[in-house]
Image (cartoon, rainbow, N blue to C red; front, side, top):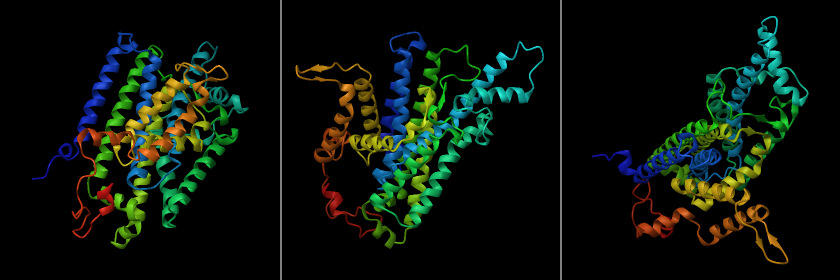
Amino acid sequence: MERSFFARNPSALIFIACLAGFTLLITVLAEGFGADVISTSMVKTLGKTLCLCLIAIAMDLVWGYCGILSLGHFAFFGLGGYMLGMWLMFERTKEIVVSSMANAPLPPTAQEIRDGIGTQIFGVVGGSEIPGIWLFADSLFAQLALVVLVPGLLALVFGWLAFRSRVTGVYLSILTQAMTLALALYLFQNDSGLRGNNGLSGLQNLPGADAIPQSTMSIWFLWASAAALALGYLLAAWIVGGKFGSVIRGIRDDEARVRFLGYNVEGYKLFIFTVTAVIAAIAGALYYPQAGIINPAEIAPIASIYLAVWVAIGGRGRIYGAVIGAAFVSLVSTWFTGGQAPDIPLGFYTIKWVDWWLILLGLSFVAVTLFAPKGIGGLFDLIEGRIAPNRHGADLGPDMSALREKEASE
């Protein structure tokens, strides 16, 4: 008798229960709920952290399970934010323009309203016309579709070109980093149609929701982020829990052998690369309305490098490890860089954590790599007493002859 999904993936059930309890607790204690124990800014920080956990899951799938060290997934994250941000900024600006023209002697025409919107949005970069890429900016449904389609299509085209050429290892990482840098440099230009270095702002204001306070909106986005993270975790657990997961782990460990066994390695890699790009884009679409602003600096290659560090610290090859790493580093970073960590006077020098945080993060990454390669998630092995199970000689692969002595010894 076949076991249920949660019976085969007990960690998924535990994670969903913990996430639900955490979301309920924050909701009850939040300022918007009336308890006023947790501030609105903190609720937004926690909501953004859940979004970062979601993109960490995507990174873990593509790197921890499939062995593709992508240094470009934050580009998809940013594109998702831009796609939804266009609708938020367009509709919010439209409300302002229509309100300002309400007292005019004659009702404004549709073209006058559109010209006003163009001036308001693009006047900061010396323009007044709405670019063609904003064609569907007045449609929430269309922009939500673009959140998935634009990053997904970019990942599909890039992956197809890279994987069909059998680019692997560090060369593939460099290519993904070059893609991210090229996209960021393009968005920095004022004629990109996305306001250049100014980016999109005012995203925290939902159109038609002037009467709803930010304290309430922050809870809504917290719920949405938690729901997306739960679904992303379940999807990841389903992908890696079956035959597909065995194949991509095989690609990670020995790509040539998997190809020799007759599997379409490029197809598997392209699928996982595209799916994780879409997951990253959805995370970005939820993140930036809580941040309130997005600009090209968010897509810089360094952000994708940070993402790899989060997953490594949490423990790659473990979905919950990626979540732990992203949450831990994000919240600790907020504490150190937000001025909450006290400075340490040494007499001849004062340690200011705002300046030293990145160095501390880098040292943590090196320490984890050298002394705890399984990351924080590896601590669960100690708790459960499952350190290096004795599986020597066992049939561990998809066929009876697959013996993985190296895996059994790790």
